[in-house]
Length: 178
Image (cartoon, rainbow, N blue to C red; front, side):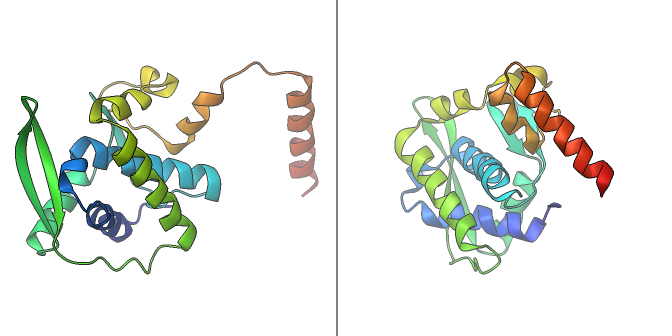
């Protein structure tokens, strides 16, 4: 699925609206909810929910368009942002000022996003969720480099055996016959 900027913007707005206590959703967690939502829909529904481009940053994958989208939502009066100090570190908190129109999303997409919001905001700190994004694909990329969705499969690295080769041969034969 190609990148859909409006859908991405609406998803940012939706995530901020779903987290009723802004202290539970800082910039790091917002970025991780977006990343894991796109990855899980890619893995389970065969297409990422937004198709956003993510780049490697110090604390994990960050959507390339996040800052312009947040500024746009602020300018539209849909979102307010507050910078605070949290345990001596800067933290950005988000307040949805309007209700987003989520009609562009399927029920499966929204269900996935809701599950990711709950998992990240209820059970993780910004540091612990960032640590989960530092996997084999992360290690191979340089800061600023794109992290494609297919990197979700890097967690499944293993040895190729005879059954894998037989499967691949069968797929090739199907393609040749088509």
